[in-house]
Image 1: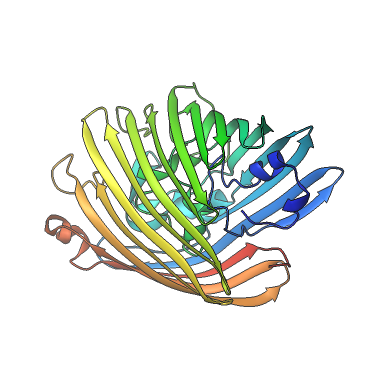
Image 2 (image 1 turned 90 degrees about the horizontal axis):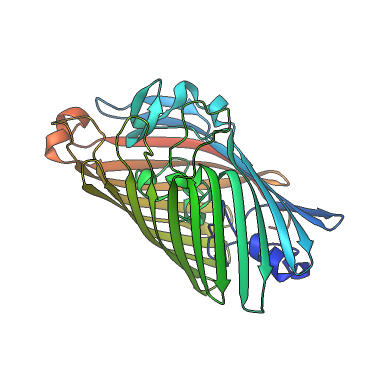
Amino acid sequence: MNMPGMSSMNAAEAFLLSQASGTSMNPRAWSMPMIETSSGGWQFLFMGTAFVVDTQQSGPRGADKLYSPNWGMFEAVHRVGRGAFLFQLMPSLEPLTIANRRYPELFQTGETAYGKPLVDAQHPHNLIMAAGFQYAYPISETTTLQAYFAPVGDPALGPVAFPHRASAAELPQAPLGHHWQDSTHIADEVVTAAVAHRWIRLEASGFHGAEPDENRWHIEAGALDSWSARLSVFPSDNWMAQVSAGRLTHPEALQPGDVLRSTASLHYSKPVPAGDWSTSVIWGRNHDTFDHRDTNSYLLESVFPLTRRNLLTGRIELVDKDELYVGPPGSSYRIAAYTAGYTRDVQIFQHVETGIGANVSTYGVPQAIVPYYSAHPFAVNMYLRMRLRSALK
């Protein structure tokens, strides 16, 4: 992660501030949008993104809504000898800005609202998405040890979560494969230990496996009943890759059984004259221990700045959906989703990037569910985007 003032930090401070949510990382070349200040030996960082979105969807199960996905991050890092300590807090006002505990998204599934499974809808995030503490200590010039504890946090499982992923920066809606790839970015009682050596890092986590409940305003707790491990490699500043696996104990409230999750992803970020070109390729698989079924998800997404103020973005997904509740019980359907969008930045405030944009999603559906969704369902999202950004950017 590139940021002003990094040259004055020790190795441990720079290591901690190169992360996104929890201990996940984007490619180092990506210029993370932030406002930075320092005082009394502390470095303070502020990040935040908010969208105001109007969604229009077609078909029998389509819906329309005006809502606001949003999230922020505050970090404070302090040098302690050769090591460094970091505190991280991620809030979201989505419990207030997304009414009825959901926003419409065709073929999206996962979690509940008013005691029923969410289908064709995405849940809001919690008021406190993360609150955690980290310590990093370099035992040599090439090796760093790290410890992380978060009452609410992000275990070492999956790629960078979509709200913090460089390649998803101009897409307000969640990926359809969210619950196959990065849904654990809000987990309870997370404990992680890691070692990084040169261009490789190995992490192991214990955490509470249940997804957050419908009360988005409080911090939950639970037994340390789940585990994960992640191996990440950084062959250059532009590239990073990860493979990870974990066991989630009873993650969905209304479904029996545990989930064995496996993921792999490749991420690329390159500074270009107009900004940062970022791309991700992600695979995720869930194995349900109750019915012994494997379901897969595949994602390709990218954001490309044509000019400083004109950005193109896209996402392609293939996801096996077994929670649509159409057809015979337990049926699984492979859904294809194709999204293309454009954002135009407009200069209004010094420290806020304001953009106006839109994206269109079209879907490929199996013939068996055409009566429920129509042969060619589509969705349109029009949005206003605001993002904190240093005046140096």
